[in-house]
Amino acid sequence: MRTVYALSGGVSKFAKARPDKTFQAVIKEAYDAAITDLGLDFRTFTSVVDGSVASYFSDHFSRQLMAGIMAQDYLGLVPKPGHRVEGGGATGGLCFQEAWKSVASGHMDVCVAYGFETMSHVETWKGNEFIALASDVSWDYPVGGFYSGYYAMMVTRHMKEFGTTPEQMAAVSVKNHRNAYHNPYAQKRNRYTIEDVRSAPMVAWPLTRLDICVMSDGAAVTVLASEEGLEKLEAAGAAVTRPLVKVTGIGRGTDAMRMSDRPHVDYETFMRDYATEQEKSSDETRAYYKRLWKHGTRYPGVHSFRAGRTAGNMAYRQAGVGDPLAELDFIELHDAYTSSELQTYEDMGLCLYGEGGEFAASGKAFLPGIDYGLDLPDDPITPVNPSGGLIACGHPVGATGLMQGVFAIWQLQGSIGDHFGDSMLQVADAKRGAIHSHAGTGTYVTVSVLERED
Amino acid sequence: MTKLPDRREETLGGYVVHGVPFPVETDPDALAFLKRMAPLQIEQEYSITYLHSYGQDSPWFAGVTNKTLLASQDPESGYTYATPRGHDMYSGEETSWIDITDRTAKVHAFTVCYFGSEEFLPETPFVLALIEYEGVNTLFLTRIMGLELDDVSLDWIGMEVTPRFLRNSKLKPTDVYFVPA
Image 1: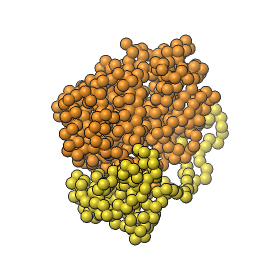
Image 2: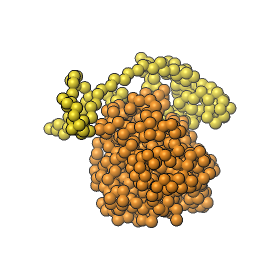
Image 3: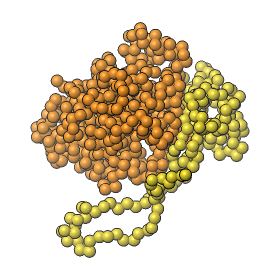
Image 4: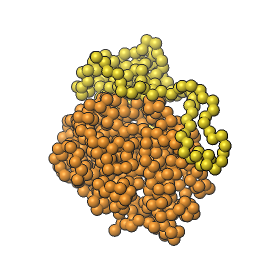
């Protein structure tokens, strides 16, 4: 596999609705931003780019099949190769990794990954219905298809199993909304308290409206290249930002579409197949998990995302990450729900299974220098969602995973201040970060590790 | 005292409009002005009826119509699925049907939905739950009736429940629901 560089990215500010432009023109906003960041014009970039991967989740939202090719031709990329990927909420993460594969395999030297969603074309409750169609239409959807309900069920089990509290989830909401205050690309730039989150309208107990991301319109683009691609771009006049950012690990996992079908494995199987290397090597951790299993915990059940753990382990192995909390400087994590961010801390090995609630309210995933109005017992270690995440930026599904890629590139370039006009969210001396993309109830999950080249 | 909401509910629908404002002359200034035009939005209806087949899972629906809860079981390992599967995910073998109507059932996880997808909005609030059966390896998604929503509590997890069947079957998984035992 060849080294793959993530050279630039662009985001159209996510909004509740973008009736002013068609989806192709919204994508072009992000595309132009990515090209401009390379110091190239449209024609020159077009002459160098080898092809593309398109990311969008639902044909229902735009009532348009083959929207990908419409974007491809609008961007002037025909007749270059391209294809569409789809995997629910993880579509953007999958797209990023497909572009990585195109470059790593030698199939392309420069590949552009673009993603979008236009969710405003239907009313919110119809949109919820479309999203719920990403659950088994024989068995799950007819019972009351509603993704917020599905995630709420998963977290009630987490609460029962591990003592997690709604206030710990609310700390995630406070953090992400507060971070977003400094991100001009975010939609919801607010200072909330735990009480604000808990007193917001209840959507699906215990999740309130402030625990849940919003459907949005938007697009995001990343440009990936090989060493040869980088040389071609620079020969064409590109002024590629240094230090370079490379993608050093990709991982993916899957799980059964129906939550009800997920296994409840014993301790030995968990330790053999799912434990992180760090967990396997620690006597203390093994003893902790033995106590959990003795107490009745089984894995993953519906309280944990086995796909997330699988993706994380795979990406960490490739990138050589042994202790993610110590070795990742930040994570852009798929926080469609505060509960799923909290659960994902465990999947990604930032803490042990069962400790996600305590971790969420500890301060370890917060940014230094920001007043969250919370009494946080620990100092920040690995900021999670310094951008504000989906909770504050919004979740135009096909664009979201790529937006995370763009923000990660900017963090590692040290260019957050340039792009946001505010350096508050720049993680100091960020050398390595991860992006995490997650589809319906943990069916597809991707983790990609990006690093600054010294 | 009941306070009115701060905002009126937004809905689609309205008058049919024929003709929209447009410059009388298409001179350069008028054409340039079109760049500042607000977008036109139209309503597009989309409706379709699917002939959906339950395929190999059909006997389950026939069962609930006759007040019987079926499950699928791998004949060799005995691994049992509360939500039917035609083939076992571990052995790849075709599963057999077993009757679990009288098995002890408990709430494994739940939520109370106060909002929902458009189709289910009229039914809110409702309790969505995953049920675990004695001796069955996987769960079953269902509704629970008969609970006092003001008493919502994690204590509902582990509560024994019993199935009830709709008298007038709709051939949907909601033909069975559960109530506290």
